[in-house]
Length: 65
Image (tube, rainbow, N blue to C red; front, top):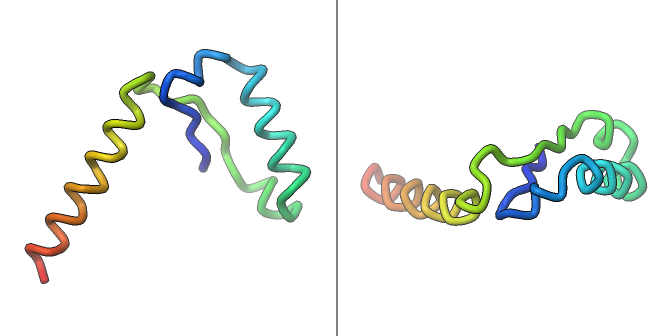
């Protein structure tokens, strides 16, 4: 899955269609058909929340070792 976020998702379907076209051009057909490309529901906060989740996951992984 490719999630378009960080504010750029506001470009709408035109951007999504361009990304789908690039995926279709550069990926194997089976992969291109399987991937979902969607706009983020988190808007501009998507990047910060994604980074924070990676850090939290890393910290808890170290605690459980």
